Length: 338
Image (cartoon, rainbow, N blue to C red; front, side, top):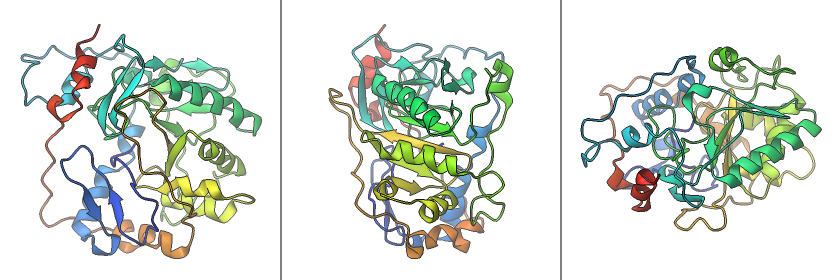
């Protein structure tokens, strides 16, 4: 799950964080030391892992048709969330990770030699073919490193775009959530894929990983993903980042891609670069050369403001949802394509 569009810069997390909300019309600069307790509480509430851990259903019901699909004020998620199949266009990731759509999407097969797709009722196992190929390759590499196989969570909808629940990003087919639960040595049933929960990797006090469930193989699979040249970012819980910093040996350059994010305590979020040929795909700021492992880099994430936020005195007003007009113009073609 990713309620933020990016940690746009690779700066020390004690420095200002640029959380670039391309779903909004302005760039929001959040400086950890200046965040009010109310703002932090609201952020953490939005970034709760509950959505992605929600159970699916064995009998998904089709959504009713829209009374006026051409209403310019209609939320774009109402349009993209109703599309059951991809646009038969050349593969292309359009726009930014949190404000765009996807043409020519390819589905990751629900079963592979070393992966299985979870929550099939969501129909979110779609991506740019580059992402699908990457995940298949990563699954094989992880298996060789001792990881039984990947349990793949949300990727994108068939035509990308905003989703009804769970994510602000995942819109252009270049994001994927990978459970930190190793794949069982059998094919999961449909019911299991809809109902089983991933293993919580973080201690109850949220100060570190849970040593009862964290293994060296967890580090290996995250490292394998981060070391891939096509990967732009890996988002994990701050406690997991702390463990990676503590345990990683050898060449540690890959740690620069791994960033703390609210939630992300039972899965890690892979974001790959804009593929060649995806005209109109907006790249994320490249990572810097720093590991971001110093105590000062992580201090904010373990502060009382984050771990024990006070509820806001005045609840923040919800942001208006993205409309089709807010997305790149090409997304209208993606919606209307056969």
